[in-house]
Image 1 (cartoon, rainbow, N blue to C red):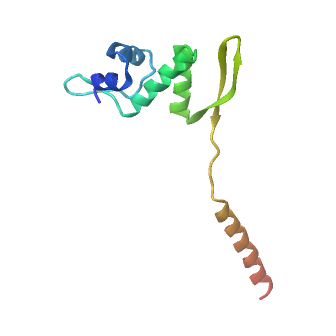
Image 2: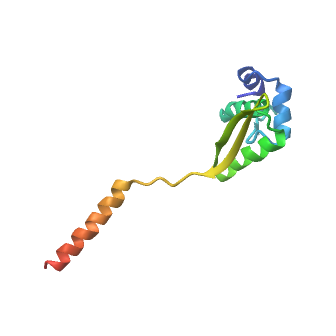
Length: 124
């Protein structure tokens, strides 16, 4: 999608989007043969995260670091603490690496097969 379409969908000015791109907050911007910027569909979600984080009080540098770690290293942002203090809402976030999912049933089947195999060998 082009910058005008992205600006319309996000509610931001095109200059603001170019600013975020220059600051390293938007990645994977491809230029076509005509020189126009072409943004992936995920860019809209990234812009929503950036504007929401700014409203929450994060600086652009903090947002850049968090987005970089989430995109490049596969981390997930997790809210650790959310409370109201002195007329402001305080939010503490952390970065976490997700657990690797596995099927417990497959593990149980393997254990059962090993037990059955041992029984068969003993009873021969």
